[in-house]
Amino acid sequence: MSNNDIMKKLRVALQLRDDDIVEILKLANFKTTKAELGAIFRAEDHPNFKPCGDQILRNFLNGLVIHLRGPRPEK
Image 1 (cartoon, rainbow, N blue to C red):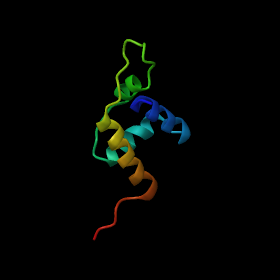
Image 2: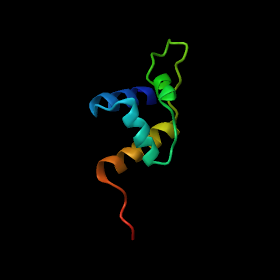
Image 3: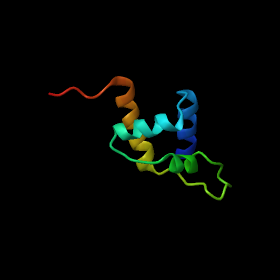
């Protein structure tokens, strides 16, 4: 299973729109655009397809933790 497949499945399972994903990535201090996300969610045979790198998936998962649990408390 590729990173693109994981991102697609999480988007559907959590009912997220592209705007939501951009905001979640911002929580992990990772900036991206809706156009870049659109390239990730395209079919592999599409000319504008872009493979989802480990960095995007890692930052999305880190941002998702912050989004669902809240920010880490100060020590």
